[in-house]
Structure formats: C-alpha cells, structure tokens
Image (cartoon, rainbow, N blue to C red):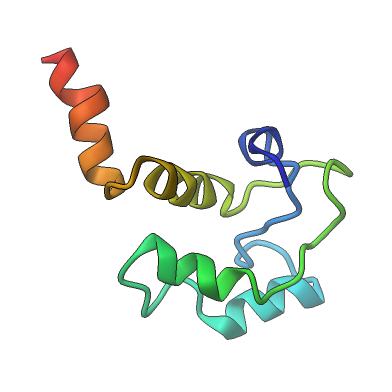
Amino acid sequence: MTIRDLMTHTSGLTYGLFGNTPVDNMYLAEKLFTGCESNTQFYNKLVQLPLVFHLGEKWLYGVNTDIFGYLVETISGVPLNEFFKERIFTPLA
C-alpha cells in the first residue's frame, strides 16, 4: 500500500459503515471507531483485517486518511495535532 493508494482512496480500506460485504461486517464487528485512544491503537486493530478489494482495483472512501495521519505521526515523531499546529496552523497565523 502506498501513500498514493491512501490519498486516492484506492487502498482497499473501508469504513465498514456503508457497505454490506463480509469485510464491512468484519470492520463493524471489530469496533474500529471505539476504544482507540491513539492512531497507533487504531492502526494495530486495522492491520488485522482484510482489504475489501485489491490495491488500485477501484476507489472507496474509507479509513485511508486515518492511516495517512498515523504515518505522519510515525515519521514526524509527534502527535498529529501537534504536527498540524507546528507545521500548518502556527505558520498561517
């Protein structure tokens, strides 16, 4: 999976909320959107689940930007909200 896949929503990730595939049902059963206090916890739950389609096969809105946020945190070494504050919002002020 590449950053391009994430940004173009062609990664095979889903929200699990709008479809009725077996994969959507697995996302719902895992309760991805509850009990996660950090992007790392969310990522660790997500990587246990399959993709709804192969990379690049089609596009579907899903948790792509959440994973992109996790990558920003991992690469920068700071929480996403601090990264946004330091790199985007403060320079705009």
